[in-house]
Amino acid sequence: MSSIKIWIGILLLIGGLGCQRQKPAIGPSEVVYILASPSMQTRFQSVIDTTFHYGIRTPEFEPFFSTRWIEINRIGDLAAFRNIIVLADLNEKSMGRTVAAALLPADQLELASSDSVYIFALEDRWAKDQMVVLIAGRDTDRMIQNINEQKGWIYSKFDRLYQKYHIAHLYQRGEQPKLARVLWDSYGWTMRIQHDYLVLREYPDKKFVWLGRGFPYRWLSVSWDDGIRTDWLTANGLFNKRQEIGQLYQDIATDTRYLGFKMTRLGEWEALKMTGLWYHEKETLGGPFFSYAFYDSRTDRTFVIDGLIFAPGQKIINLFRQVEMMAGTFTTLAPRKR
Image (cartoon, rainbow, N blue to C red):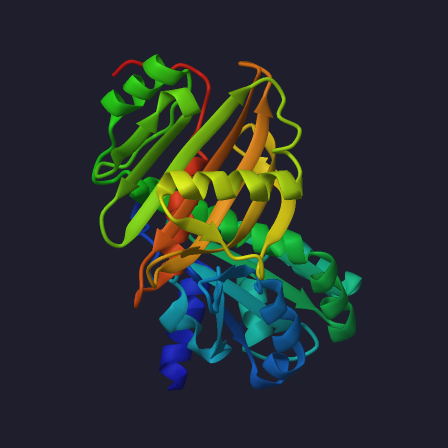
């Protein structure tokens, strides 16, 4: 890169972009760009890449985020991208230190130098809906240790931005408040529903509603029962419940090889989450799924929300997460009238 282009990038950093002049961030929402010198990449690539090593099997493992390492001298080309990490060794008179000095006030830069490590998240720094994380310090061993200690925090900054971006675009083409109201009036629960989802089947006697949309196929179902179903709130019980749901879907089963369980949140509830792969018992079909089980004290009911996707030959991760985000809008509160 020419020295002129490098200094254009530095001027952009120092000058910043006023909020009223900011354009939306560009670049894929699931890619994190790491700007670093070649020596810093060699030292830090493993600890940074593993920070983002979360994902699902589709059936191949597909990460929620991928990382791309870029020479920091290209900062001028990438300043408007959505997800950026800047690695800066403050011992060096280099582009990394120059970028850190442009991002931080002088007192904070001094603090980073004296304390050996500094991690800071900057939202909308050079573009709207952007996350820039600066990791700067004088002791690279301490920096790596600190990244290991803060992996969850670093990941959450980009994951929250991802969800904010996609939830806004999820309903950009419209949603169905009338259908949401019908579900509320019929069953006492509802959610925000994308414009092209349909009610595929309802079994009121079995307390089961199945929503879906066309290819690539995305299904979302809600099952419930009165009181606390403690069996649904265990790993074995949730697996067995999902086998029942699969038969309501018709001939869908759960692959036992790749099951994962964890406690997490869905909306306002603490929930048991199960993930893995589903398959069709009679046809060559399959893909990833999620199931959330939780108890709602407001209505004294236990719910299981199940979602799956079938999208052969397509990038699945964004589609899968969009279904999960729609599930996250589930509520047992009455919808507002529109």
